[in-house]
Image (cartoon, rainbow, N blue to C red; front, side, top):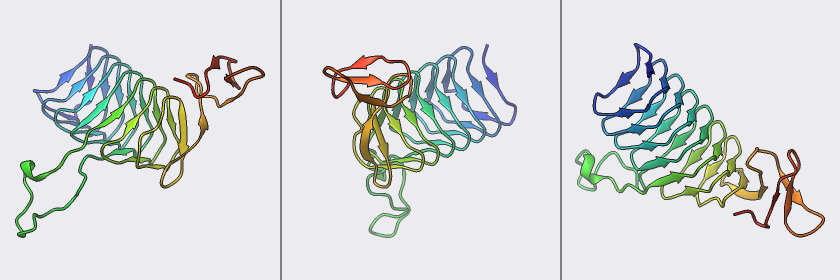
Length: 190
């Protein structure tokens, strides 16, 4: 069963997986592919041809633009923006309004299990690695490694996190140990 709120605008040419919920005032454009068991909070915008894996949670007021690939199990906090144009302009050099063919889209990939904090912005051409975590308000201008923890503007790597979300610390032997669940990883985690 798919749950789509009556105020949502979901294209008949979008693919929506089973047990997905799309809430108030969402817009899902043509060609978008949204997996199973996803939640799109109020006022989420999903552009055309975006790909979203299973069990993804997208909080209120997020914008996910053309060229974005979101793998399974990703979390996007409120007001996250995933951009797509390397050279954003409303007009061409001759003053004419830009059309669909005038944009230079650079894809963004958000890998399996990653979390992007509230009000973060991810710039075009960036990959966020598996189980990485982006702190609230960060502006991500370059790739984030698997399990990487980045914060600030521009985002900078300050450590690593476990698949459970807790910080990793150096272990007594080689590698890193989770401060929450005690899982161990190589240094840096892969």
